[in-house]
Length: 398
Image: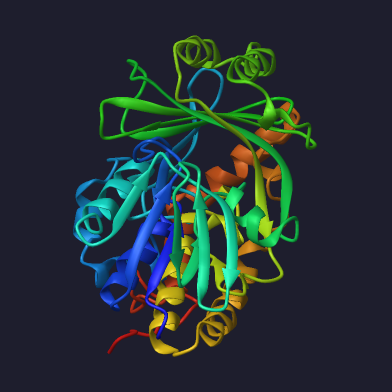
């Protein structure tokens, strides 16, 4: 491609992955990030399918494996911490994946492999874009004005850069669930197994081990969109106290730890539906373009795969418009498939009544039984690679 100077907004997963491949294909890349430094918070994420193949090509798969959280699987427990079902690591799509890593650790790996070849602008953001015949004039928050050939939005689900380019055209679609993540001190009851607890009124508490000697906790509850994500941190904590004070199990412990916590993340679980991923010399990828929601377990994988395909098509086509069109054609059918949530999601995992919780745990117990797993093995393709997926990847640059 003739347009070699590219600005990427967002230094999380999609942005640095895109920068890695663009740099390999000979582009000059700058990443702008609103935060003052890398955002290293967040929960466990997994790399699987086509994304695992891309990680191999990037030479980072073993680094990801070495940073594994150590999680052995997921146990579903009752209010007395009795185990109702257990899904060991790698034995079910419902549980812990083969490559499970803290989001912050993945961000550090991607930064390590791009920082020497990519310009990073931390503590800054795009406030205006003016496309002209030869490129895009970008105005930054610090007052600097620079020209780029292309601008790629690769930041989050509520991207400000996307708003500058596409306005309200992309649709942020709530799925009826709120979630909060934060880190708490490890306690005597914590182990290398994640624990999932269902309380009545469609509430869930999950605690997961990490590789830093702490525990990653989360609250989630079903609700129609109420704008809770716009509340202040103190108001969000107050809401969680109200929602979970009578939830039982270890709710009081988690709420007490939450009070001392400043890295609390709270949001409405949503998907991003965008009829187009490019407009003129600007395009988008990652959560800003097609967030599938954490309920799919494919958010990070989609970000990695989408960034790779976008970079590959830009390297292949002389004209950016042709590259953007090819990226959309190659990737959109896969995204559409991933965004189709299974029937009953998310309410099936958030039963409202004690009877519903009993039924869920019974189903999970059956799924996790050795007999059912053995039957499943009879119908599985044992020759299938763990990196096979429903999207065929081209090796760009070959």
